[in-house]
Image (cartoon, rainbow, N blue to C red; front, side, top):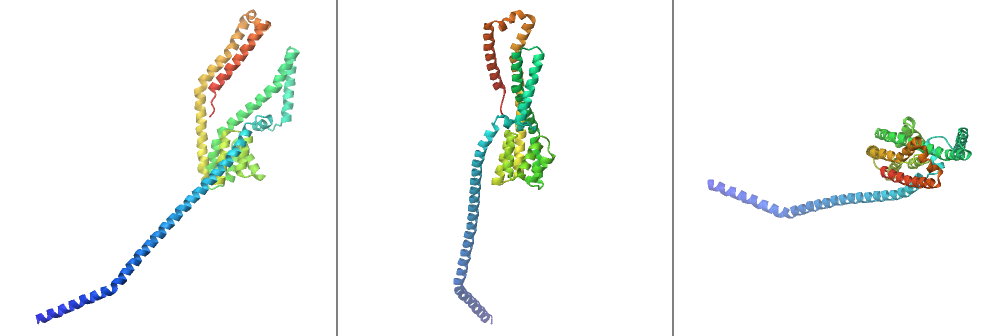
Length: 337
């Protein structure tokens, strides 16, 4: 009975193995086909992914190339504009300098004031007892030299005040832009609440926008009344951002930091050069001081320089050499930053 049962079990096992072998033989080709199909699909998907990545990478490269070309074109345009700006900044004519003083002064009015001042000096010198020729020379020098010196003094003082407040105004612009305001509103904010003379210059920018100029063009026009390299930097930043895009708040913030560093460097150079300037003042004034003291103590000793023709020649050559020395010392102690 046990042997019969073992025979039945073996037969069943053999039948099962045979059935499995038959099923495997029948399904083997199908399983292989499915495996190959899955492998092929995975390769296709991988290839599609690689193509997508390559396309995205190619698009990024093309975009960067287009942007680089746009920036290069913008820089070329800015270079041409910069040459024109340099010509304007180098314009030393009276018509270009009068608006830089911040005063409502026209060229005819300036000449009228100069003539009135020259006439006043002429009358004062005549009353003081100066000869007619000397009074005429003093009036001529006063009417031509002193008013122009006053214009230059007012321009330098206004530019110094502008530089003191310009970096602070840029910081206000950065905070305004980061808070969500557009550039136009940030400029109007400075034009309404800023400190003079920055307030006046930005008000001119707003007025230029109202007559149809774009923001870069309006900022570039600021160089006509404030011909400073710092203003030129600001106009270039605005022009590049408007043409090439980018983070405007970051660009203006970087410009503000650069302007502050320039200001620190100027102060440091000024402090380091004060000793040389003091020495130059002492050396330059020493001949005049000594001549005055000699004239006060021994007028007969030095009066020969004014009465003898040879003294006139000596004074002429001395003045020439003194002017050359002062010019050399001035160039040695003045630094452009």
